[in-house]
Image 1 (cartoon, rainbow, N blue to C red):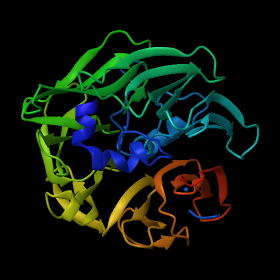
Image 2 (cartoon, rainbow, N blue to C red):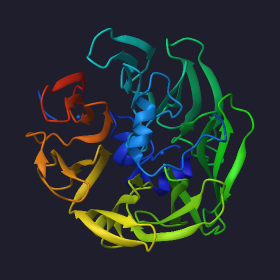
Image 3 (tube, rainbow, N blue to C red):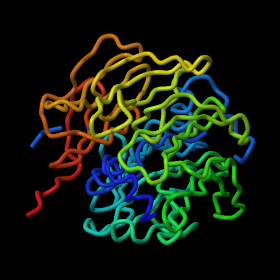
Image 4 (cartoon, rainbow, N blue to C red):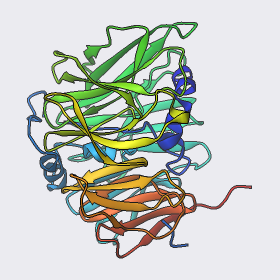
Length: 383
């Protein structure tokens, strides 16, 4: 993971580091995936709307661990029934959606540890646990009461495996792996899945081009996996977006200049942030949606840093000076501002009618209509 992190340093800083000194792999996609600043392999994921995923996640017992758009933003918040689970720098917590009955499930050393990619299915929480700023990492699970922690897979830093994004659907955990040769000129990278007990690892798709590597993926709700590749020996360059069927067949290219490692599928459209140039540092990042039938791109919002989608609305942060949270319909209409401050909100996760986000000074939640702002954790300035 060390080599991979070096190659993707600027992109990974967007989520893996910024989510409270946290969080991991950027746009996650999903499964199927100061008041300042918010079962089994036969599981059917061939639905036509991401709202179906949200509905199954909101049921009393989940079959899908988290929404695609939440996982795309670090997956640090998840919901099952009337309980919300969230990971911040001090630990992993659960509480009622209305804010009551808060319980600490896991304590974390904020300087050394982080937890992200939360997936809650039945009696278990599946998550990615990083220690020592990425020098040691594991895929783990625990009971929803915080007991019986089990390590399912160790993520090796020596072979550059990177599974900091996981997505749970039914009895399967989806993740990706990347291994570079000694001079980083070639890589073997693949999309993988394993059973929820950590056994039965299966390669779903292997990238045929060893001069590029898979840097992230999203498991859509439409029967496709969306993944992004980057050229080896290149730093701070945009990627190429592809999709492949859930069974590993039918890989096809969709678009160049993809900024995030992930895409979000909603009502038949593919949403993602793309740059106007291949060099990320010199580029403007805009939110587009793609028609998968002809790969045509439609501009939705200019100058976007991150976004989430829920119930026909896009919630996003801009990369301009104000950098507040705003919302707009998925077709680009009726724009509204949710926050009036300028503390660089990031890593938007949404459960029920609440939006959770991180800022430089703390972790917050706010209702989707912009009311009831509340702080979950304060972050003291360093130095």
